[in-house]
Length: 124
Image (cartoon, rainbow, N blue to C red; front, side, top):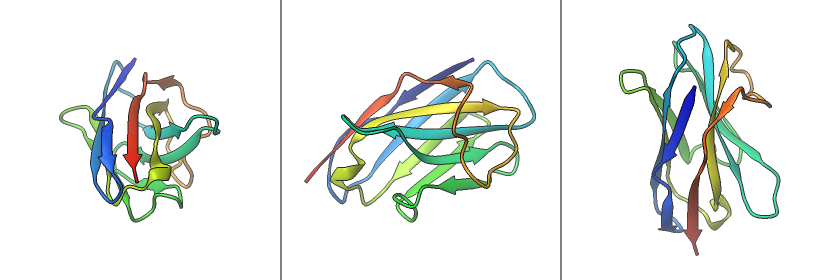
């Protein structure tokens, strides 16, 4: 299993950025891919997750209405579109997969595999 994030960078507050997670090496019928972030000196925070198949999603309250997660099954890539970014969104963003999960009422607390992360910096 491999997950590779890309697309991080520096953006001004109010701007937009899209990060990508290319995944491979697994083909279960049900899985959930999620995005987490961790800022320096802060605990890891779940941002969003998406379920395979029907594409149901879940978002943290801190990003609801600003971030959108999608899954391009043909490209085996999950995207996180981040709009109206705020300085407090600055963090390393990681994607991860929970294999064989179907519950999307909440994002998983633990995942089976993680990517290496991509840095997002929002300047004020």
